[in-house]
Image 1: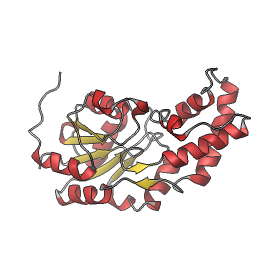
Image 2: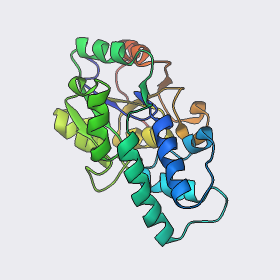
Image 3: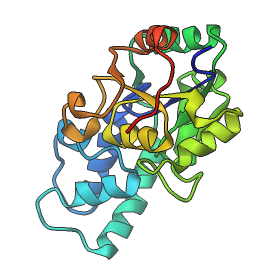
Length: 228
């Protein structure tokens, strides 16, 4: 088997969570006396964890938010997202079939996300995904988040594999940089967020249109080689 371990990003890879993230962000803005902003703009702020999402959302008008404002905004955002988590989020097409295909290949699966554990576990359970994964590494599991490779190394430890035996599947520059730093092969999906940048700019092995296509790629992939 080419890849005994498959690591997945969550937001923008398995689930479209932007509707709930945007609703929570705009509810926070309303609490802070700010007008709502478009969902597609908030989508470009997603990817580096909740703190950066709050900072970017509060600074949308061009004036950086103060530390006090960020702290208050973070607390309000967390309260709103806790109530909204999963309400309008939905699976991307082909996710379940793709996870099943990887399982049939004999691979062990893990989620590696920058989303906090408080929200990740309930979301996976709510969407019927929790039973597919042997390990879940969240944004607060390790000292550092993606694009640092630390959470990817931790996921490999939990799966009992070396990083060179893993394939990472994500949608953003954070995923690509983390996987490359960990010495992993990496695939990108074109339907995710990537902070508003074209997915074609990512340093990945291939762009695939679904998790099903990723499973096919994993079967046909050439053996791992050293990356410069």
